[in-house]
Image (tube, rainbow, N blue to C red; front, side, top):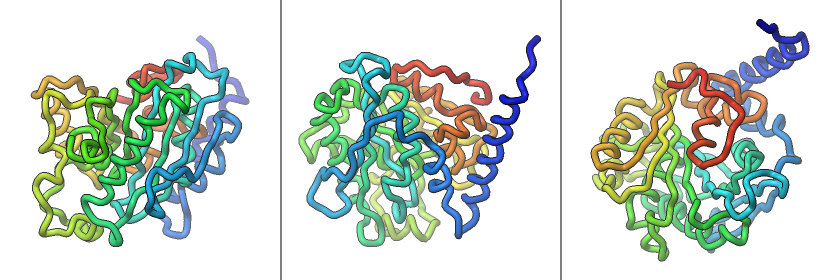
Length: 309
């Protein structure tokens, strides 16, 4: 039997302190948990291109995180992940999610993080159309970025998980820009809302013009046998986006349609720390969350599944 060294205990204690700071920042208006995380992740584990236009509108910009040349797998086999952040469709910016780009790019994925139109200036389906246009850009540019065009994935957290699901499941949106969900290798939903009518949250009401929200705005309505395979992850005690109604119902619908789906529920994470745990200093927290994502992308991960079920 081996015991941890003093140095390893000190590192773990430091990481735990960081985790507490991030969790505290998530509930204190004057603090920014993403600034805390971004300030602690490396900047030398990827190549960065920022502020690339994928459309004509001011918020139709994206950032790209590319693996370093020595990172495995071989360049032609790299997957590409388009990540959509959350914020109830009213807040958020791509720069705040460098910690997600770093986590995936450092392990061999090309990562695209787009901005998209936010409410109240933009309402449904404007942010879905922006998301589809960003995915179209990624499909068109995958090979140039060193990724496999047949291994393009979409991934999103919270309201970004909604955008992800709509692009992957409802063929209208990629169809409008000359693409198709059939071109996607899969989608990853992190605590996404997939069935939320009637709408009670005031910000979501504004984003979806409630009560004039069309029923086909719900991702759950668009599951078919042709839907891309999925990885659905959530905190089991999430009290913002209820996992039973959203992740659970989506998994059930995908399975009923014969679509391969994996589900990971984390007992020791919250709605916020589910995405925060992608950051390198606290990747061990509550799961960790990276191993199932990396496996789904076809990339090796040295982390274990302990804590997930």
